[in-house]
Image 1 (tube, rainbow, N blue to C red):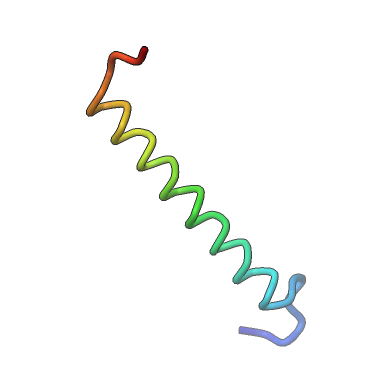
Image 2: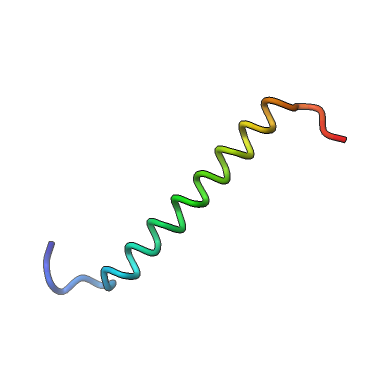
Length: 40
């Protein structure tokens, strides 16, 4: 990696963490939707 990155490492790490949480939430929501297709 080069020193003149456009974003600081902390910001990049935070983006990965946020995206990871969103991915888990989406996967969980999809799994619940498939497990219970009929919602009240």
